[in-house]
Length: 464
Image (cartoon, rainbow, N blue to C red):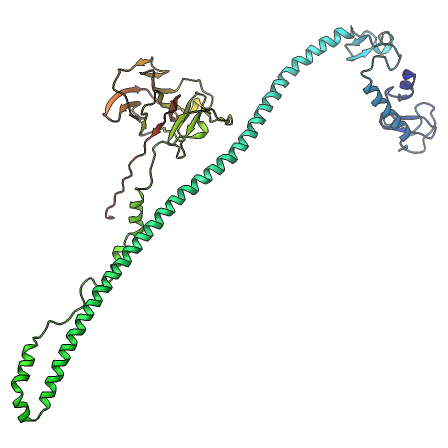
């Protein structure tokens, strides 16, 4: 019954299940594409089966047949793959290598498969499965890689938000400190201005009070003497000696003058104001010649808020970004050097496991590991110098290092290390450097390694 239904649902032209069936005026049905292909180039459009002339070039859809075909295909798919031939209702025992499709024994002997090569279906299926598996394996690997990168992208996007919020907080904290410094500086300078104002106002008040007293005394003397001069001659002569003594006892004072420096010293308060504030600001700011890049740090390293100190701790869930160092337990500087002379100091303290040096930047971008790394290493109370260009060298034992100075002279091709406390040379690498060299720090110890800040000097002089 199923095989018979399969035949009834096949298009007479393509011999396959109807696809978008249409019905002609003669009641015969065909796939829409089949009948159009049949009519292509023909002036008279007739039925491919009975040759009846069709009155329309766009026959109507056979909706009932379409629904029946779709239901049949759905049921057939649910019941599993076809195991019988659509044309002959025989089991599909062979696979035609020329047509690349399963066929029955009757199909093998038909004209449509004349001189074709065949294989048993089980052998053909096994061979083709192996072939597909061969192509499927790299696809699975690629899919796995895409899924890993997608997961890393998701992790990176989440980490970016954490970084942005943390960085924003640190910026605000730094500006808060600067604002506090400026507010305190403003308050101190306004207090100095008001103190000067108060002192000079008090001095001026005392000066004015003294002048008032002198004016009052002189006014009394002048008034009494003028009245005496207006008296009659006999009266004047009787009081002449007293009047003379009065004017003689009042010596002529120096002309009163405004005291020097009475006005507010605006030049002192306003002259080079911003420069003087900047000079004082250097006491509250610091400068590090090397800033560590958290995007290059091993997940097991923890960097300080100012990115100058590093310790070893619990691994953090960090994205696998391209900049992250491929050397375990290490971190690189945010900027490298490709010319000139540079130096930076690192406090190693009591850290028992550390390395200091430089790494060529192309190593990070996929270059050969260990092909551009120069460093000194301290581990198990032993110090060594290591690089791919020189043999490993044991360095003479010295007193416990606390601070190490790293000095790079790019043009001279020298990378030297010295004890900062004693100014004693430790080791020097000699090499013709190329590319960009990034300061490199390694540690597997919870005690910090810290890049020391540099003192800030400000000089000023007359413009020429």
